[in-house]
Length: 312
Image 1 (cartoon, one colour):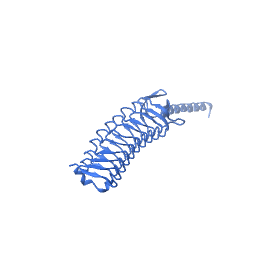
Image 2 (cartoon, one colour):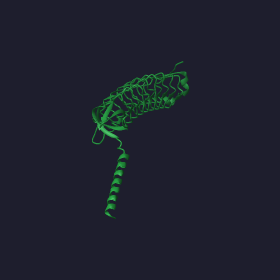
Image 3 (cartoon, one colour):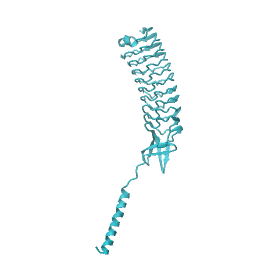
Image 4 (tube, one colour):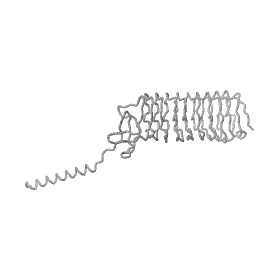
């Protein structure tokens, strides 16, 4: 190969290299932005710019959540603004030093177990137009003493506030139609709760072992009460079940040893076993004539002083 041919070959190779570099640069997309932290809060990108949205996530490495946290409605990272629309699953789970949390109005969804085990959490400010709060969100928040659930929620989900042993005051919105399984189980400081007027279902173990509960009024719309719904509510003294109630689950009031009297509405078509078993203080049960067909002796085992009055 002569000198001219050699120079031509090197020139061609250089052009090919430049073209390859150009193709590589043009074809290469920047790595998607997924996680970042600003102002002591970690975020995960849900939707990139220009309609950027993020959710609060578990703290990134070398971070932790503690004290008082105020989540902004939007956050800037680099040159991009992101709107905060959610709190992710288990985002604050186990943050034992977190004491207060305020969420912005932009947040519409709070994930499962988001604050589970935040044992020092005392104050929670929720958005007024929240769409969903998922299961076990505030479970084992043992310092939380009051909470206001915003209007719009239809279901209080599984174990949402279970084992919140300091919880005394709960405000539920009228939009709630169902209280889920174990929603308030072991809330031992709760003395009463105002149930929404359109509530139709109280599910299994919803108020299990709420040992401080002394009174509760059931709305006229309630049609179903699940198994062990108020089991071992040892301070409860009186219950009046509405005519709309069709299903009363097994052991619903079993072990309510302070319960003195109860009234069964006329709509019952199913009444489980041991409903009032071991309600030792129970003296009076008022029932509609239609209830006699679903009543059995085993439902009142241990009620040694019980008198049953048929309301004609």
